[in-house]
Image (tube, rainbow, N blue to C red; front, top):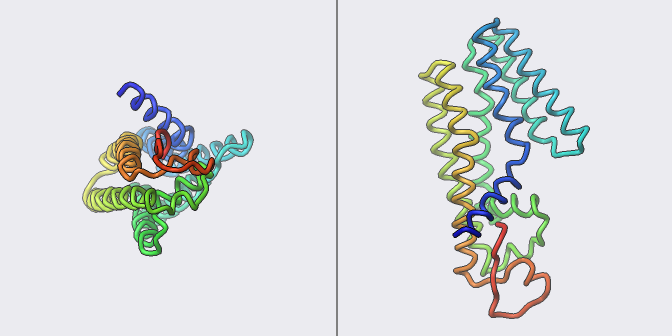
Amino acid sequence: MKQLLKDIIDELIYVLKGNTLDILIPPILFYLTLTFLSLIYALVISLLFAVVMLTIRLYKKEKWYYALGGIAGTTFAAIMVYINNNASNFFLPDLIGTGVFIIVTIVSLIIKKPLAMIASHITRGWDIDWFLRKDIYPAYVEVTYFWLGFFMIRFGVELSLYLTSTTEDLVIANIIMGLPLLIIVLTLSYVYGIWRLQSLDGPGIDEYLDGKEPPYRGQRKGF
């Protein structure tokens, strides 16, 4: 159990390192500045933060996609808020993004390239043929279905809040459904994924690359 807990913490640090802040801070910053300043100042400050984060990522040669997405989302939200003078529109990009994730997840299952598999392949660089083995593939399909359920529930909650709640409620909900809920989802995905890979009796990625024959030790760390 102690080793599993350590593996989960290592996994969360690996997946979440740095990138989550690029997405979570702009809406929080927006609400805090909106409390004391005008709408236009709140939008400008949020957008400047997103630009600074992108600059830092590029300078440090880190992953900059989240920061770029933060700029695109903030810019879109700024236009919507300015046109409609409605601060709740700042959260439209997050709502749209969740909808896009649902579509992408469904499509990935239809074409038999589950999102969990593609995400792991891109993030870790593991051989795609390992993921496609019959004693490996089902684990990633099942985790992808779990993600789909999560995205659908989140979209329903976000849409309901967007239509009926105040900006303050939206900020609180966005924080709760952001990092805290993401950590829970990733933790459950990791624990289930590792258990499922073990139950399928397939080789670990290292055993696969080394050409080992069964019985396999199986994947022990990393999903």
